[in-house]
Image (cartoon, rainbow, N blue to C red):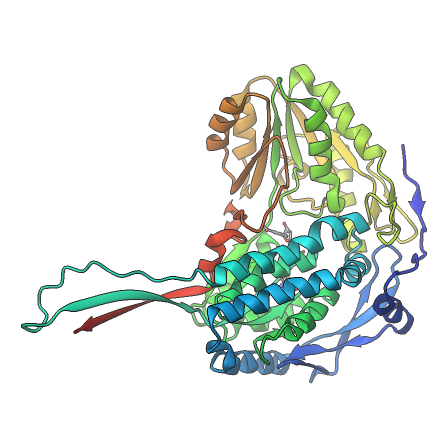
Length: 508
Ligand code: NAD
């Protein structure tokens, strides 16, 4: 088993000067309001840590109600400014420029994300930061495709000799509060900001308090790309304080939220203040079903990667797998072997395949799920231990022999932990898959495509992958059903979240 921690307690050298400077100075990071960085009125800051070492890397502003008011007022004012006058093509040009700037600064953004969140270099550099740029490119195109309709009316009471013409136009919903989590900070932010800006909205973004650094840098790049002052604002701080204040704010027209199901409920409550629109991308407990005819050369690494990528801190991670009994031992051994062979370490080290989890609290939560499962009689096939000097590394863990109603089987662990159970009848596997409060994602592994298509219609989930898991594209809507939320990010549908319809009816 590979449980070697590379550079335990040591930060490998950053490649970019900006991140070397950050590490040398441990700066106070300010709020980004009206096109400039400002100290918080509260004067309060929160420490942000490198989860791999536990060291403080910066302090972020803990925004107060007064700071939130400032940001929302600026966003409201900006709705009436030059941003409302520019053409769709100019807006598309700006969004493409944002993508260019993300790409031009990709190494710095990757290093910020690695230090703040703990992800390995390859996750940031080859998956998430390019995907963030792609969101801006995709929605640059969509900005030029916002169209209303000419209506075919049957009104017959217009004045004699006159006609009626009616049509619809799309208008930005107004000020958007984007509230985002810590697991994939930049790309999940881009999934909100790109469609919101494409629609012509203005934004106040509240990133997760554990991982705000890349959001502050992105706001600067968005400003540099030509977005006018006040259109893009970032307020950092605690969820229950800064986030709640923003979600309740009467000047906010829409909350675009990604995070846990429990916070999603708080957002819905907050939306009652002015009946603001809400979209929710929440938690999951996504199953992977492996049929007896599956190509195991695809299925084993696909499922292992689907849970161990980003240390399992992925909303759609396949944290459950149901494997046909005839191949169960082989697949279980394969996934366990893949996990046990992963090199754990600091994300700045290019050889690292899996980093720490985001915080000590998160590591303790994951460990407690594993301990409870063990006490209930489950078998830990591999992993199960916390490692490293500050205990934020969790070994890739495979568990079997769990009860279908146990916590580890039903709740979102949000770590590198998969439960694997055998099935005999595919109807059982489907029933177990659907027996969940969540409905975010799933995958089916088989070489019989017709069968897979049929099964895909029986699974209760926002996304069904066939012979893959966790495959994303800016064009593909992603989101959940049941308590995984409502609304979709990515794809053309996402633009609708940020647009209202206006009907215009004229006697001519
Ligand atoms: P979280 O709900 O704790 O926090 C998310 C954001 O909400 C943070 O910015 C936080 O500060 C803020 N917040 C917390 N309390 C708030 C309140 N009362 N009012 C307003 N804002 C508040 O989630 P997390 O722990 O940061 O992220 C992990 C969760 O996110 C997991 O459940 C994961 O499944 C989910 N997630 C879902 C998706 C998806 O697309 N469905 C994607 C990524 C993560």
